[in-house]
Image (tube, rainbow, N blue to C red; front, top):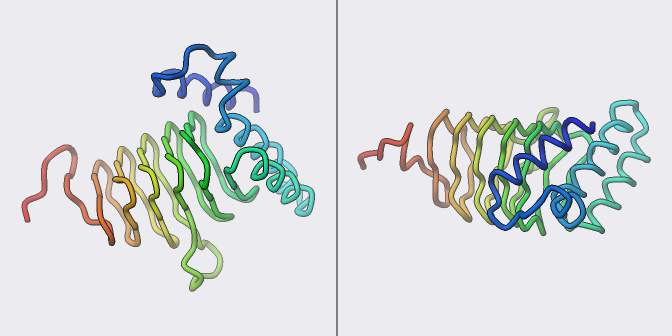
Length: 177
């Protein structure tokens, strides 16, 4: 767990120009606090101590405004910037080196059973207020513009914006309409 938290702190130092020191990030960033609590809760969840896991996640939500279900799978190098209102559902999977801004939901649609939440690849940027809903896949190196609603798979290297989200760039090449 300490290795993962260190990776999270390093990623924040690389990607948040406001971060001045590792100790500042560790002590003052809600992102780190939410991830530490999530990682403890996830341990309990994997060991079938579901009440304890959910109790821990509710403490994390109360303290940080970031709700990460203990059943979610979260990678290393995660930055939840200005994280108030972020919700990550039970079957969501988040890769490595992912930036998530405030008000984002990785949620379900209410219509699915089993895998109900999105899978987010590596090196993904998710803007403020984004809603990614359902058991969809977000590829590697994807950028999702603020307030987009993503309801379909997004391929590697794409940039998507809008409601519903549409691809505007692929591998840094603008899409022709």
